[in-house]
Length: 312
Ligand code: GLU
Image (cartoon, rainbow, N blue to C red; front, side, top):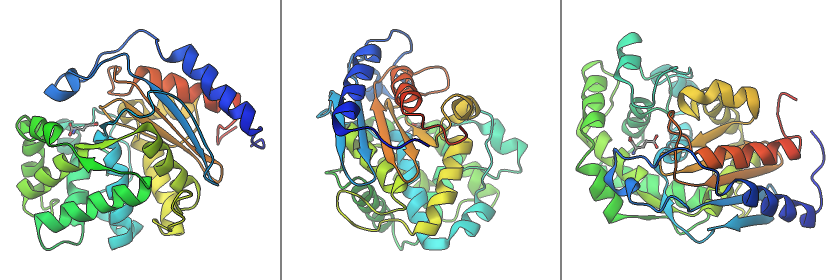
């Protein structure tokens, strides 16, 4: 991998890339969660945070949007601290499903084992495996790790949470299937309820870039200076992201961009460049796999310009 260019050149790259892709047509807001359908689809942002904490940003950088599936990375990091990577692999898995993020078929085909903590089934199983005595404690631990990974003012949106809790019937079905197979380790409706809350927090694009930079910086948040993730746990987290971070498009993403990433149906996407930087982008319209159309193009362009492909 090449050395990073100057601060001026990096800001120029972020500005240019943003200009090139922020209005790219194509894709649609997620509509199965009513709140997400109502978010203005012209919003967009791009942020780089380096492993030593320098920030380069463009676009709607103040806008706070739903973290959605990117929360799965935070919960996975916490779970790794609680039980260690081998337990995560044994109870949940480390394989791509090759199917959509909320696929019931993926469970049926694998004896109701989720395969990945980054699909809905595996994320609810992750929530259920966390050390906690109550739903409230489970939730507070998750909110706390989201805050420590981002060094940001992450808060629950009551509006998004309400919108999701009243429409998450499919996820409730998945939670019961997991429970029936012995793969949900607390009350399944508690796992689903807390999982839904973790998806309903508000973040900025910079929050996601800091979270990504924390993973790039061997688990130490470059903004707060806190060691949030044990260094040995970072590689297995990145491996899970490589396998399933962009759902059934993860292989194509690895093929084209070559960086571990994670998307959310709120339009956020982050990518980790180990030892160097976190990159995050946001824009609501999604492709068929549930990944932001513009965010993918912005991050791919930055990765290409800086020659960041890990397999390159
Ligand atoms: N809350 C969403 C769900 O469970 C998150 C999905 C996602 O971002 O992939 O369906």
